Structure formats: structure tokens, C-alpha cells
Image (tube, rainbow, N blue to C red; front, side, top):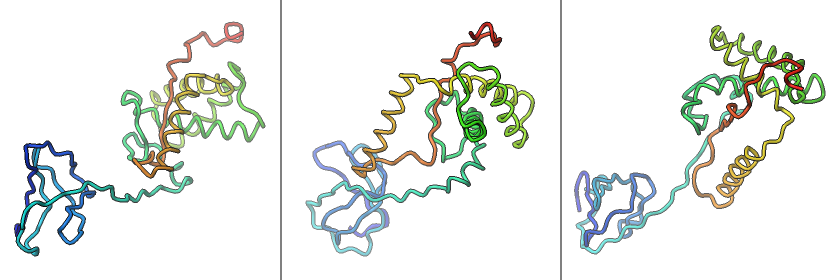
Length: 218
């Protein structure tokens, strides 16, 4: 039993169901919890056991869940530091859209500013509102020193965002409803990790490319 790196093996060629984590408690070793390291399909290491007595046999291991502390940044701070493609505080659902975080956050900031200023949301397919909305987003982008190509893509994203601010898309609603329900269940059951800080989602490609004139939109 006294080994610097004690290896535990499961009998009868049973495949191990443990994972390398802190949540495993071998019964009979002073009731201690060990961080294990999976070595192969039926064995794992529990670390240094040189201070224990001789092993007698017939040991049992129990896989248990350990509490995990999750820290969140203050909202105000997060809204100032959202311009990061691989920020661990942002959940990624589509790796092809990893670079869209700035456009999403800038658009929501413009959304809040427009609503506060005009006491309403941008009207659907309104070029006048879209122009004002886009100008606000571009102003935000300039403050973050975006280059010309990035500015063009950000402005295009913001314009589409403005066009459907008052719209209700059933498919998006169903998706977001399922996502929120999932997080509620996590909170009630204390199982699985919650979304860390932010989760951005968009289907900008659903909005058709149109010739943006009042006549065409009407």
C-alpha cells in the first residue's frame, strides 16, 4: 500500500467508469477524498500512500461529486472587456462565429442606448432607425480601434440586428427557452456546470440580403 504513486486496479476486467477528477473517495482509507488519475481502461492512481498501513485487500471505491466554486466577473467590468475572441467567460456554440462577439455586444449596447433615447425599439425594416442604430455601433467600434474591414462587417451585422429588433422568431424563441430551462434545472439539481458569464448566440444568416431602399423593403 505504501507507494509514492499508488495504482488501483479493478478486478474481473471490469472497465473503469472513473474520470480524472477530484471527485473520488476510496472507502476504508480514513474516509479521505483523493484526486485520481486514470491510467488505462481498468486502473487509476490515487497518489502518495506511503503514510498508510499495509493494504489488506477487498477495497472498494466510490465515485462522488465534489462541490465546484464558480466565480463571475461584475457585469460592468465584463461589458468593458468583451472584445476577446477566446475569452473563457464566453460560451462558444459555433466555432465559425467566434469572431462575432464584438458585433453582438456592440449591437446590444446600441440597442440599450437607442431604447433609452427614443423610448422604443428600432422599427422592423426601418432604414431611418437602422442608420441611427448603425452609427451608434460604429462609434463603439471606433472606440475599440477596429480596422476598416472589421468596421464594415460590424456595421453590416448591426444593420441586420436593427431590422428585426421588434421581430419574434419562433425558432430562436424555442432555442432560448430550452437553454434557459437547462440552466434552471442545473440550479435546482446542483448538477453540471452553469454557463460561465456569457453565452452568445445568433443566426444572422437567417436575415435575407436585400437591396436596402424604402421601396424594396416596403
